[in-house]
Each structure stands twice: as structure tokens, then as C-alpha cells.
Image (cartoon, rainbow, N blue to C red; front, side, top):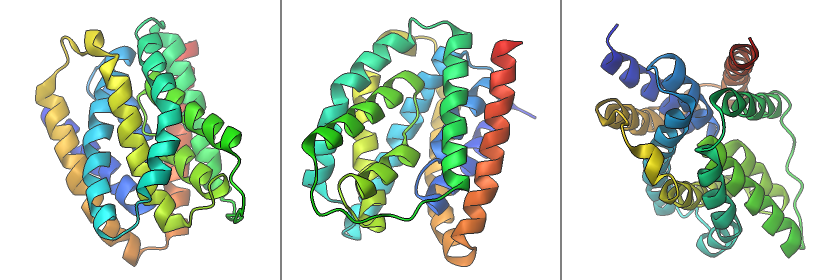
Length: 247
């Protein structure tokens, strides 16, 4: 199977997951780029940031039209993550491939466990600035180092820390992810040399189109079932990546 077809197929699956679940799908971009398309871990995390930025920005426009983006809240949350995202982007280029793979596997495993054990949102009446800043900074660091959007972390944080309703949290998380991804990309200019844009561009395009199909799929299939299936796939991928890094 040609690399172009693999890129299109992987992008479609990741976009489908993003559209159906509202976050988490981009976690599969890095392993897909490494194991299906032959990217190095550093190149894969940089390419993933490009894909995440394009997909998130596109989805952000759709959610903004529906009135599900809290711009002021999202920008304040994202502001706390800009510097960590930039520092993380610098750090990623200096980490050995196996270390980066192990770190990514750990985060993917956490995401899978979160999806398998969903928690009910608890409304908050008072937002603690320190806690909100810490959550935003942590998300920015994860985005910068690992090249993931972090929707699986951003949505729960926006609900539990800032008290947003789920639809608003999903829409606002896309704003946060877009800002953090752009900040991380700004510090990865050196790692963008030699990237295969002939594969990244169709990958990103397929992810964008897949996200629209994912929205339609979510209306027909139980969200809980989709989430459990995706979590099991993600857990398997995390285990394989960890084994690959250790062995």
C-alpha cells in the first residue's frame, strides 16, 4: 500500500475520532506518522502539530458558528500555556527518540484510561486563577513536547476548573489547542526541515474531512460506545509504543 493512501486513511480515521468524540483523536497522529509513514519521533511530533493546528482551527470555525466558543475564557486559559508550549517545542528537538516515544506512550495511556473511566462534570461557582493557570500551563507543555492537541486533557480541565458546560468546553478547547499548537510550532522551525509535505498535506486534509463525518457518526452511534472502542485502540497503541521504546 502506498504511503499516500496510508496517509489519507490515517488522517480520515483520526479526523473521524476527533469529530465523533470532540477530542483525543490527534493522539493517534504521532504513532501513525511513525509506524505507518516512517517518520522519526521528532519529525512525527512536529508534523502532528501541523495536522492538529489545521484540524483544530477548522473545527473551531464550525463550533464558533454554533456559539460554543468562550473566546475570553479560552484565550486566558491558552495564555498560560503559550510559554510552556514554546519551551516544550524547544525541548522536544533535544530529547532522544526512545525517551520521546516513552513519554508519548505514557500520555496516550492516560488518555485511554480517562476515556474508559469517564467522570461526571461537577459545576464550579468560583474559578481559582492559580489552578486555572496551572492547568493551562500543563496543557501547553504537553502540546509543545509531544505534538498532541490535548483535547482529552483540555475538555475536562475547562469543565472542572472553569465550570464550562460540555459543548462550550469542547468548542473552547479547540481555541486553546490551536493557540498552543501555533506557539509550539513557532519554536520548532529547525525540526521542520526535511518533512515530507507531500504526505502531511493529504493527511491533514483527510483529517479535516473525517472530522465532519465524525460529527454525523456521533448522532447515530452511542457516544459511550465510540469512546470505549477508541480508548481500547489507544491503549493498544500506547502499549506497543512503550514496548518499542524499551526493547
